[in-house]
Length: 398
Image (cartoon, rainbow, N blue to C red; front, top):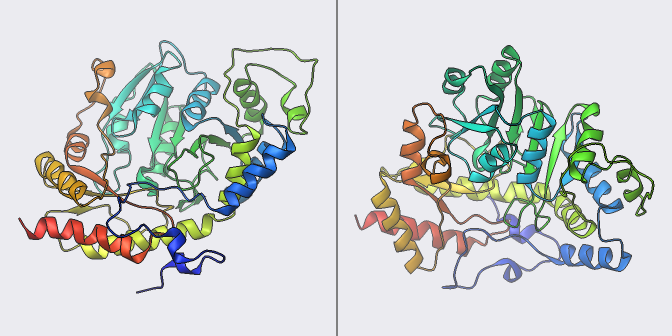
């Protein structure tokens, strides 16, 4: 077994990262070390708090990390990034967007926020990504885009096929990569290829800006429009703000949003991005440790991956049914281990009960049985082992 990367992080003692024995182990725990505090203080002292030079610096760092020559536009959340992307793509009332039902409702809300309708497609069972053949069956005269999602940081297996399907029908592809910052597909890092890719840097993601997101696009002509959409339709103020200044002579050319990322969250994002390779490496190790421990538990189904291409956001297992899943969650809660459910199918919610959909057997089976276990950057061996022993002891007693 390899050494725990937590102990290799220079300047930090293991006890700074470890969770005390018998203390509550949260499902998610962002790393907020001294780099974050230093970046916050520096940005506060600089005094320019809105969209500014630190925002542009963070965008440039995202472009460099993701690669592929794509352009980054930082936003206040991934939900806003998705809605702005849909707006850029010309999606609106009377249109349909094919989406996996199995994703967080924020993605569905971003699409219906434009006035469009979502159409729910099923997922494939191994990596829980969009099933391209189920999406194909749902394309109709109102279809304008396909939204795919990379679950838990594991790249969607059918990404290339989705893009080919979209090209065949002249559709846009919006990638909900909220879970997949740092993940790698055959063509490169997620976001370095394709059409419109949206990342999340929310409070519990692999890297955080507290709240925030970004749109990655390979099209230079998209960037100015995205700047206008992000900043309430204003044409010529973004470049001035990137210099920590303002342009008082501008035009407003379209309906926009107030969705920009300010200087303080951007500075925090830069400090997090400097540690991204360590975040990815230690989370990959923990996911493999979990897999090794749970692979021979007959009641559990694991994600089909070796984690080598994932920037893991979360770790999930599937129980035989919802009753046993809920029992496991209660059992772990009694041991001060917090778990979660990611996700309920969007088609089950009242707001989307009339949405067009295909057959959703995999979505329904997975939603009823999936449980999220704790996964953090720099987990101690003791914390990891508590979770493993908690899960194993539940099944050993049944």
